Length: 409
Image 1 (cartoon, helix red, strand yellow):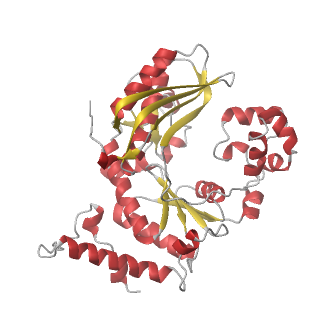
Image 2 (cartoon, rainbow, N blue to C red; image 1 turned 90 degrees about the vertical axis):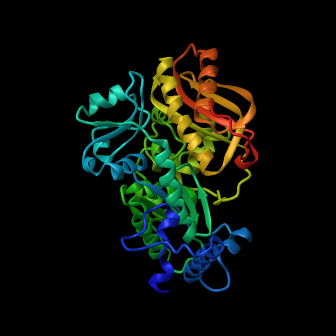
Image 3 (cartoon, helix red, strand yellow; image 1 turned 60 degrees about the vertical axis):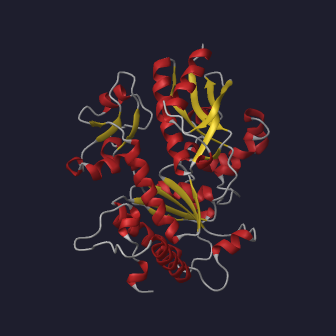
């Protein structure tokens, strides 16, 4: 396939035309769509072997295959660095500046000092006093995300976007998956200036952990056996969904590594964590996962939650963290053109009691201020009497956004 067939129209990514390149005003929108569709088809034919595509394998219900997880590196921070290149190489902290503000994200230079997402900004400033605070710009992040996902969907048939900065890809059937994904990452960087890390494996869990293993700019492909061997000595907290408190409880049982967790008797785990969660912990430590890439899931609700390293008592701090979670949630809703009617609040207290509250609005919305305001009202009405170890916000009753009216505050 020639280079001309692989080149994506820069204007379709929201990028400026190259110097000397003028748009053809005589070309109709229909012709443009047809040309782009033909280019996409040509690209995919070059990547998928024989008469069976990854889409067809997916429809046949094939479980054995190859999946990838693509994760943009320090996404919010890198979008800011593209807009302010003079900050490149410096410790940048994307955060509000109020007394109860929390960190949205940080550049890798700031992370080297221990700065992490959802950390109180005052704590981040103590850890990294030379850090440069940059206020978040969600519109810029959404625009960049759309540009990235346009490139991804231009090359891969089956894509499950997970929030604003990551996606699972079904690459079953690709002749040369490593080369194809390296080319995809290069095209993302050319089109948007952003870098991404890629993990490849036989299931979502292996792919996800692999993509995190060598950030930024990582490219790691592992089998299940290789993942078990490589991460046997890692903390159970490496696995998505195993939070700090679960790690503490496992440590109290003498289980401090993934290798040990995968080998422990499931009955022992079930006695402590319950008949469902106990065996799940062991299975995930063994990198067992049968979830498929589902690009067209009938999603009726969506949420974002955060487990804290240290319990949070201050209601103002909880409200600030709700703001960060709501921003992430609403960014994802807009990417999928979805709105919902029921706002949900979730808290897990320090004694592991889980509390949920919900309120149904009179209309569907994706408005960040409205959802955050409703979640804050639910939080203030409940007023947790005990410290909070997990906080979440969600919205249910999702429907297509273009069928609904917009109610902005």
